[in-house]
Length: 492
Image (cartoon, rainbow, N blue to C red):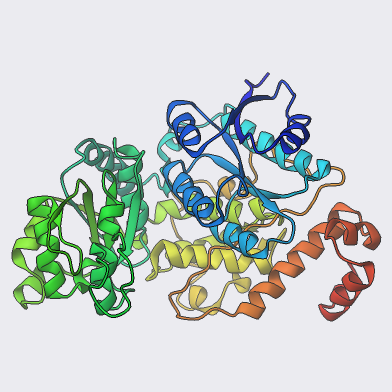
């Protein structure tokens, strides 16, 4: 029998507490209530909380979202169920952007509470269940990084050692798409600073004229429009970790100010006259050759040596192809099982083609492929001819390709104890991980895809009963029929 799940929820008014408590009086949950923000943070830091029911009406609107973001960053393994007032579209949108485990509405709907708790219980029990694994599998995952190759095992060991020293700067090198931010997060999560903020900054994505104020903050009146003091990301990372991605794109004047932070452990806000002390560990990352930039005079030599106290390199995917089946299995689980779709598999020749591909976009390119295939081939087997042309153009099916790991892992993408749909279950969906690198996304296409998924899952749960499916989706039956007709889904 599984141990009770420790659940934390707010004492958000007598009526709400009674309604919620009626569904929590179960041996499956060990319930703790908090009455203030201070008590909430204290309980999270001192107790092994597994599930948080977070009522956004318990705090003021803006601080509620800010605090929720902080909790989510600080406790990445914590399952969070947000409580949002019915009709509060702005709060719902903010919650969806955070990609939380679940959200429910007030006034409370007993069925919705039951579904949320059953889902949480099942997920946590699966996580805690002992899974028979071979020796190889024990090092397959490390704080979100996946791999069993020699290069990745060495990387995991190095991250563990680096994390023990919470002051030394680290320069993370790797091609685009290899997971430099994941490595930085792993260092932070494994260090003693993990209770404080992890603050990422993409130096290439923020215009030069804004990056300084983003990093250092500014004082009231520092420039036109500075109506009040603003905390910079360096100060926000005080006690925690600041991750500077694409550090090679930082302009020289900012490089000088950053050097002072590293040397003197202090900074000056824009427009400030007094230096402020700060205790933050700086991790930097780049895909550029910083030594070459130093030779060209585009990067300060003294800053380079300050940043690269501990250099750390991430192997590109083309040099660790034995990890491809593991990565495929993990992404298939993410984009199918966890999102209400049927898993899919690859036939041997299709997998061989992927193993022989060069993967210039590295792990990010592989993840995008799986996301694409999960929409088109859910519940099917992907053949060689089903792959996009670029993956097969240079592949010769007659050429033998070593598969260091068994392809069985691709045939077992579901969790060991999959959760079957519950009777009367509501639809669960999460915000997809959208890549913004191209500069634009097709909003209408994404919304259309979400609607298709929701309708298809509702019809599957209700065995094709449109009236019941409409109830699950909180739609009028005529509205559902119109959407299905427009999307050519009448045969579901």
